[in-house]
Image (cartoon, rainbow, N blue to C red; front, side, top):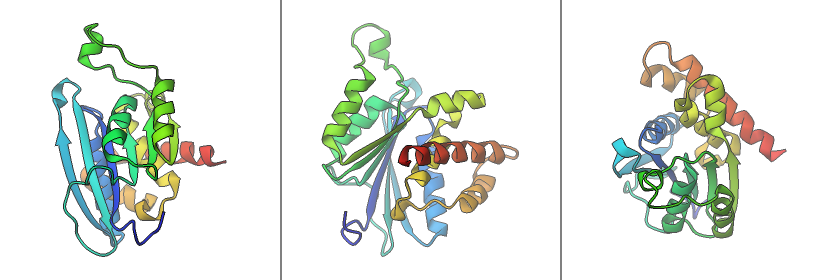
Length: 209
């Protein structure tokens, strides 16, 4: 993908209510602003209290500020904390050059829990993502987070995974990330979240090998 054509570099972080993708987008934005980037963030919400869709748009530029919402079909990177949400956003905002990073652990919607709908096999979701996009990276961020004692760390693990991709437009410096955590999070939480970030970064770097 041409670097000039990709200014702004359009990133969507998607998931369901309670997964912390809005916080993730705000932290990424602050890190990149400190690196000298122009970053505009926009969010769209479903019924977040009931596990509805939540989608954050980040438009990252070396040149100027952009409008907060990414036009349909113009995402360069889609980061999903939940597989079917990743596919839903890819279908609307992706294109054949889009890169995809997705967590593998499903969160069942209410209609699936109620028995009025079925959740597709994750392998089918991944196959469709691969068909629609340029490249797909996967990791089980939820499993890593559970090993740390709390699934809420999944969002920080996914930020670390973004850093591990090594994309120039989303260059997340670990030291700057740590300093932003100290400001954004309450006292005593930064160290564990930084550990989650490093676990995500290492997990994706292993996929590159």
